[in-house]
Structure formats: structure tokens, C-alpha cells
Length: 389
Image (tube, rainbow, N blue to C red):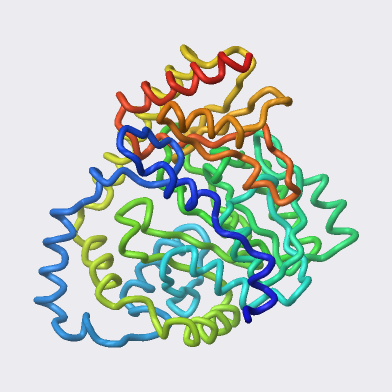
């Protein structure tokens, strides 16, 4: 009855967990959700009123598949601060970054096409690629990102249709690539003529340290597709994101999008544009950074207090996630069931590993819980861990 490709794709483990943990009293450190209390509701309301006053029915009408020109121009201007030479023809507006991943998969992947990724990698990307029956080859990663020497050796043997990378506060690990690793990665991809898909939903959520050049800027916009979104900075419900790439690739993505949804919702695009031009966006971002940094620090202190010494973790300099390493013999999926009995939840790490490893890892989200719930949730997890030590 169903297509063959559907037999090889399973439901998102994260989405399934979120359904299970909706009962009262549950503290969720599982989902990768932004804090709803930080959504700029009043500013968006005012922007919506201005959009309807200025554009009227135009904002509610069918629009260009590529996206409204003014928003694409604004994004191209931002990209030109580092890459240069880009126009609106290099930008496509999508229904969230997830649609960008879907369109890229449609354009590049045939059954059995090779895609290389970090290990672990973003689950939503793996799902998008697997839906089109890609052969995913994970490249080992360390605390600074993908291991470029290993990547070079793999590229000598096999050429992927693209290499998928999340260099800023990666989901799930929270790591950020240092500058030298970024340069090595871009150089390796250039030498082997491999396209990089750079997914950057968390780049604005930096708490400490300096902003580093994107892979897109280091490559001068060549052989790199850059994906960004307003889901983590304005509101995910708007589903407004962008893909920047070579004009010929954008044309292919546009054709794929035409067959998918015709275009991204017009009103949402005008609303984002109006909000960006209102002058309050940078102040809003600063508030998000401060709040998330405080919550990260609360979670860090709680783990230091309640987790046994056998459990270790990183300290992300931005983003939304901690990555936790359990003793090798522990299974995070089994421990999750015990934690749910204590009304606290997380995401087991194995789902993020294309090679099926990582059973003793887990991801914790600190953006979508108030400090008191973070502390209590970590305490509950710590109590479960102590029964296993």
C-alpha cells in the first residue's frame, strides 16, 4: 500500500517522547524548544498591525516561491557582511529549516546516494535524508567537531552528494567548531569538490566568546549551502527560515518547493520583515542570550551537585543543550523509563547516531524550563543515577 521509502523511516523519537511526558507534574528537559515567555508577543502584534496597514491584502495573497523580495534582500545583505557578492537570487525562504533539509534531500538524493554527517548528528536531518533512502556515512567527531583527518581519508574513497554539518552549538552535543577546525573542514571540502550543507539555527544564541566566521563566509559562498532560521530567535510557530546558495542550486530548490507548497506563508514573511526593521530585534536577542545563559549555569551547578562522578558532560558556550556521557555499561533509553517514573525526562543519545552507537549518552535541554524546574529535574535524575552506581 505505502511507498518503499516509508518502510525505512521511523517516527522521531523526540516527538514520541514529548507525547509520553505530557502528564501533569512532569519536568521535561527533553525537547529542543525555545522559551515561550521570551517570544516577543507585543512586538509581533504591533508588527502585524503595521503589515496589514502597509500591505493590506497583498500580505494575505499568494506570493513568490522564492519568498518576498524585501526579506530575501535583507538576508542577502546580512550574508554580504562576510561572504560578499550575493543577491536575492541566492536566497530562498522556507517553511522552517526542516523544509530546507527536505528540499535539499529532494534535489540531491537518489536511492543509495551517499551523505556524510557528523556522529552524532541532528535527528531531523537524518530523518529527511533517510526518507529519500540515502546511505548515511557518519564521520567520527570530538569535542571540537568532525574529525577532518578521518573525513579526508573517507573522501579519498567515496564522494558524497553532500556533507551535512552543524558548526554552531550543535544539536545534540552543543559543541561549537573552533576557527582552525572550520578552516580545515572548508579546505578539505574544497580539495575534494564536496558540497557542505551548513545548518545554523543556534548561531545567534552565543553566551560567551567571540562570534566565529561561518563555513559559508570562509568558503566565500562557494560549495556551501547555508541554512538559517528565525524559529530560535523570534518564534518557531512562524516557520520562517532561509537557504542561501549558488543561484543554480537555488533554482533547483525553487522547483522542488513549487511542487511542495507553492511558497512560504506570505503574512509570516511580511511580519518577520517588519519586526526586523522595527529596531528591537538586537535587544530581543540579547535578552534571549542572557536568559539561556542563566539557565545553562543553573543546570551546570545542579549537575555538579547531584550527578555522580561517573557521569560527565560538556559546557556549551551557546545554544540550548548539554551533552551527557554515562558509564559505558549504562543504557540511556532504559534509564529514561526510570526517570519518567520520577516525573523527569530527557532524550537518549542513541537516536542521534547514524551508526547506532551512543547508548550511554543523553541530551538535556535548558532553554524551555524555569530555573527551579531545572534544579528539581536534575535532582530527580541524580537520584535515579545513584541507584545505578
